[in-house]
Amino acid sequence: MTVDFVLGRYPYFLIAILIGIGLYGMTIKRNLLKKVIGMTIFQTAIYLLYIQGATKAGATIPVRSAELGTDAAFYINPLPQVIVLTAIVVGVAITGVALSLLLVAYRRYGTLDEDLLLERMKESV
Amino acid sequence: MSQIPVLIPTVLLLAALISLLAGLVNRRAGYATALIGVVLTLGLSLTGLVHIWMGGEPIRYALGNWLPPIGIEFVFDALAAYMVAIIMFVGTLVFIYAPRSLALEAPGKEGLAWPAMVLVLAGLTGMCLTGDLFNLYVFLEIAALAAYALLAIGGGAGAVATFRYLLIGAVGGGFYLIGVAFLYFSAGTLNMAEMAMLLPELSQSRAVQAAGVFMVAGLAIKMALFPFHFWLPDVYTHAPSAVAGLIAPVMTKVSAYAIIRLFLDVFPPGFFTEGIPLLAALGWVSAVGILYGSILAIGQQDYRRMLAYSSVGQLGYIGLGVAMANPLGMIGALLHVLNHAFMKGLLFLVGGVVRLRTGRTRIPDFQGVGRKMPWTMGAFTIGALAMVGIPPTAGFFSKWYLLLGAADAQAWTWFAVIIASSLLSAIYFFRMLEMVWRNPETDAAAQEMAPVPEGQTPVSMIGPVAILAVAVMVAGIMNVAIVSALLDRVVAPMAGG
Image (cartoon, rainbow over all chains, first blue to last red):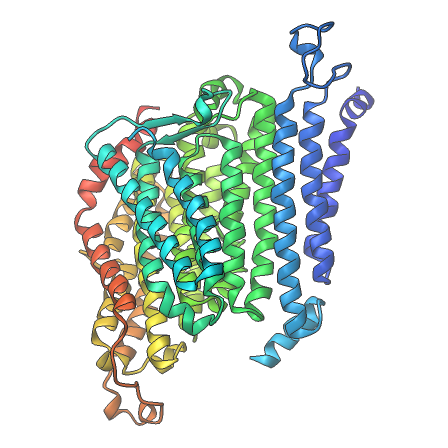
């Protein structure tokens, strides 16, 4: 029973672990660039959640073919894929803005280490 | 008329693009095109508001003529009309105010600030108008990304503070997205109206309950509800006054709006109180946040930091009103969205005027400023009285509804928290009022400070401040009309269910 439960849903457990790794990186890591990496892992895990939810065994891409007809069971739901595509665009934009903020901070303070950065910010005020 | 829901964000998105291109050619043209877009949108949203106010039906617009649930739908109903009018009113005033403020506080970067400010407004109005759960996420991130760029415009410390906001914002947005995934895979739709019809049957499902928790938690993080507020004081302190005056009043409120929308129009009545005690948790977190924000505001020496901590407390009021789960508390929360947008906008803009005229931002340095700048500080006085909650300013009436709601819910601890927090805010605002109006000539310490230069505050800055000060009074006096024409219709699902 338990084994079936895990085997049937193992992708979700892997996604949950990825989300955990991402959150760990964002909160615990002291280097701000590693926080961005954590954020990217966190976002990617959410994309995988959508893809996993839309996966169907034995189904094909949602382009109508003559042999399979119009039965929806043979086709993968395209909407989650489109959502993920949009979410990836949003995620790339967030990463871009995050990196440019870090660039500004690095040029001003010469470090991306959180503790050192806070120290230098206090000195410069 | 039938195109209003989609025109509002579209005009703003177009204005942002044109303003960016025009700004490359000529800096003034960039500002002018952005301003035209914002004023046009204000006109559209007020036209729609009048239609709804007169008892008109909600306006629905199916994008690309793909009818929901297949296509995305934009809905201009009473709640959306109310929120969009608030956003555009405050947004337009800040826009008129901004050029002089940015020229001082972020010189040379105005050309990029205008498109970003218009994008913030486009994202926020889009969030209020969309009838699609995933589309709401997209608009949420449009507004957030533009806001990050604006808040970091001051450079250095502002960029570091904004980076922390970005991280916490990404977690909030991510949690919301996880919640949408669970809902979509349970119900098979993203349209809010369709979802509301399907969810009552599914409300016992674990996935739907988890979706509710993830979505509300994500939005609460975005809303800077205690204990996720830690980025807020740094960000508001380092941002230019005009930017803080735009972000502080409306940005966090729109995340609160999304929680209210989920609660009223998506999840079935009782879902958040019976199955999972999510609202009780929200209420207690808000209550702690109210006291925490009010107490920390007392200790602040920097004017903007004090306003930021007071915002943490004020956002708690909105959360508390929602958590009461009765129509009175919900009306109080919604009125507080309006009142706090006006009051906080007013106070941040006053701070910008004082900074322009005197270069002062620390509270002890405000001593005697009132004698030199009586009009500006008169507006500050109205804002401060409204924050404390003295009638007939707007702040009194939202607290009144919140108290009625707390009494109705038999939540006497929350009742006491609201009273206590009003007394605490009286401490920090009355202390400031005394300082501002005290005569500097008779005070040895004040005489040593640089004198306030003679001269006039530019009309483009004092005008919006004056209009907001009047609006704080008008919103207070008109509260009965606002409640009966708009908010009673908004909370109708609660009274019925």
